[in-house]
Length: 255
Image (cartoon, rainbow, N blue to C red):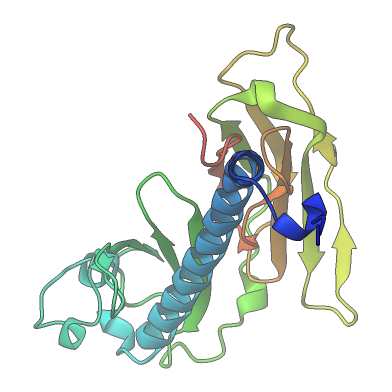
């Protein structure tokens, strides 16, 4: 008796298996950059969360100090004799081996008889983003001094970039929130956004807003739009006490 077996009953041949493996390898190889980029973004998000937590923790630790001890030299020292070693220029999270850099700024930096002090904490890693937190601490012996009495005016904010050619419309925008009224008032200082006028765009460009009002009642946010960033680059909200400068990395993770 003769029985004919169809080809389908024999399964895959060696050549078919090899072709399938090669195709699968090509597909997986093409997806590696996608997974690597997703992993990198997840890692960056975690770094930002950790940096924010560190900054907020340091702010709370500063508020526990005696008012006279809150000076810029004290907070930036690594000595264990001050603040039980809670301060200093670096901090490494448990389970990690790369330290975060911490910079403390006190305005004024070393006076003890002023009505209040502005403390700003910046947390970052080399070549990475910067997370900023600040607080105003009242002098407990200053009597009836009010934060609303301190509103510096006619300030300037200058923004510069590692490479401006990547900035895309609407360019760089600024927003101000006045917090001492209910409800809060959100306004856009003039000009609300800026783009460079030079052609071609120079690699190093600065944009400046003038006539800004500072103090504890005004919070500013600056946003930069870049062709090399998936999302708009937004600086952490900040309060202005003096004229300042802000830098954007317009090609995060690139050259």
